[in-house]
Length: 443
Image 1 (cartoon, one colour):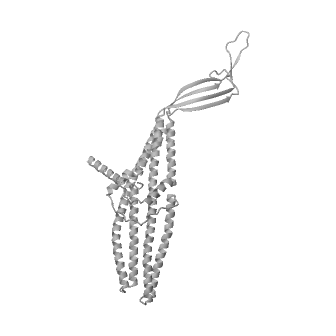
Image 2 (cartoon, one colour):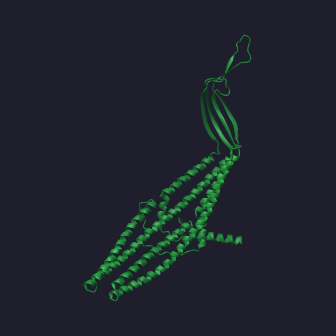
Image 3 (cartoon, rainbow, N blue to C red):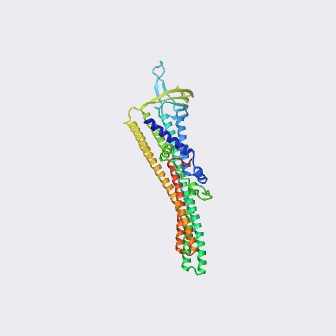
């Protein structure tokens, strides 16, 4: 049974890799990919994380360098106000007692010191590994933030596209209404229509002009937000020839879940943080062991080893230093427990993120499925509304229907066309959300 489960899981992972390796040719469009490149290159939040990664790399190199010997210089000068004196115990006959000074008042020392850690309880090694894992976690954090920025840019991109498509639909509706206004005016001159009919069509024209004005104002707002997000002054045109109809192709939910488990940077960021915290536990435990270091120094001092001679001398010293903390009122134990508690917290957070990703994938999948169903239904409705409007327009010219019927048919056609374009954009936005949920938005 376990072998079958492993086989199915491996198959889904390979399937997810195939989904990633073969993206659709029309999605994401070239204009959106260009915006993503601008965000990746210019966004200040990503650049801040780049500096954090660079700082952690420097920290890792500094910790690694602490394994090597350190060369230092030291110098000192001291003046002693009073020095020790003593009388020689052996006295010659007829000679008064002799008093000898032990040392000199002015002391000088210049030294060249070499220090080398021998054993630190694996503390340095653990700190090096912790810095390396922290660097990896920040790299995955940067990727997760970059995916979020890509998604925000994509939503603004498609909102802007929807705005432009709605303007195109309203422009076509405005052209139809202006044509109706010309016909109604001609009918009015021929006394086949009333002034009220002309007023009705004129009011409809003013409504369309007002909607177009609001859309143009909102377009400038969207462009400003997108420029700020991408840190650019010029935006590429979303689509030169309008929004293409989506392919409406979907894979099973299990394939998207497998892709998310393979590609989501959050699932890689938290394990890296756990490994870093695990190394911090080891670094805290290193205080249980003795610290052993060696040192050698070369001195040029006055006085030197002969403390009684006030002259410059050279000498060297070699030694080993051992320090072992035997009792510290459980300070080390509490630090180890604190590091373990943080490790446990990261494990719980990792499990929460995993469940959250499953929910995000399922939500995006069902949103995409709903958008697909809405597109198929709305396309059928648009075809029916076009035939209905053409039939009513012909009947109106023949005098069999009223202007109110023609106006109602035109409004229904415009509304259905606007809704269809909105459904297209919702499909692309839901697909973008699914790419974010599966960790494939930047591919």
